[in-house]
Image: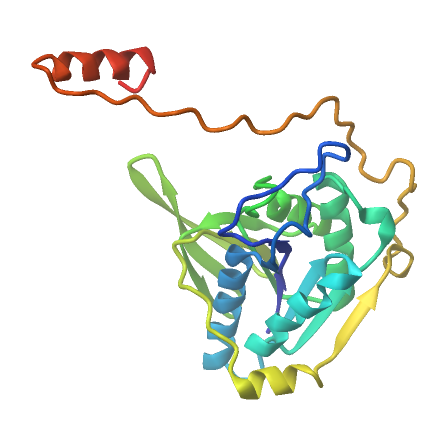
Amino acid sequence: MKIVVLVKEVPDTYGDRVLGLETGLADRSASERVIDEIGERALEVALSYADAHAGTEVVVVSMAPEEATATVRKALAMGAASALQVVDEVLLGADLGLTAEVLAAAVSRAGFDLVIAGNQSTDGSGGVIAAMVAELLGVPHATSLSSVEIGDDAVTGTRAADGAEVRVSAALPAVISITEALPDARFPNFKGIMAAKKKPFEKVTLADLGVDADPALAPRSIMTAITAKPPRAAGTVIVDEGDAGARLADFLVQNRLV
């Protein structure tokens, strides 16, 4: 079994995000850069399966700038067998369509039986990359899974729905995405950190993948306007003078909270 896990470097999940008002891109130098937490959970699903099934190979794939190498290498320290990083200046500001095309090409290069991704990143929150990659690869997909069972021929899981759970299954090869309902990722230990330095780590460009992207049109989307997030307004304080209940009810109605 060969499992490819899609990981992404993002600004610190627990910090404030800063958007460049001239470029419309996230300012990734404004805070510490880390592997997206949902990507780490996806990696944990793959590593847990590998722990119980000898012969399973886990490969991490990422589309990220050169300076993200250390972040991707953390996935190797956690237990992945190898990594493939797509590095190309043309990809700066790439939209979901181009990102999916590049990731699908990278996954094809690595080879796979199963691709695991997070349901959505904490920076872009597109929520469609896994399905788009599956479409480009021509394989079935099962997205937003809150539980995962990997078999020899198929992958099965549950997806939360309004008032119910949906049981879904896809024949391998396939692509799945998981939610934060899956377990937290393991921490790299010293042995893993040292071993990561010797594991295969391939860096490729768009030319290596055979993806044609015009530098002038690479993002494939046009941003028409951007503004900074408005400062947080002061809250409303209600002092009980005998009419607090009515005033609270009025506040909830005015703000469409009931």
